[in-house]
Amino acid sequence: GMPDMASEEEAVDERMSGRQRIDAIKAKMEQLPEKERMVLRMKVFEDLSYEEIQERTGIGYLSLRVLLSNARRKVRAAIGKGWKRWRG
Image (tube, rainbow, N blue to C red; front, side, top):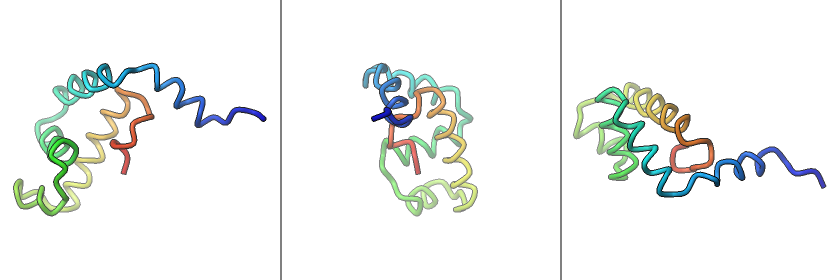
């Protein structure tokens, strides 16, 4: 049958190796505003929950959601759509 669009997009994204992707993420994170970078690092690299991040930073839940959403969107744009960890 016809190839669906999703698999085609994934194929494009696969051209970027894991190593390149990590480098792209780190480079992009360096450019983020300090608060966005801080909360994204806690969520993704330290795997903290929203509650744990709130306790550490004193940032309210809604503000935290916005910061993470903005940070993820910027990083996703830098690395392509294929990395599930940056969704949600």
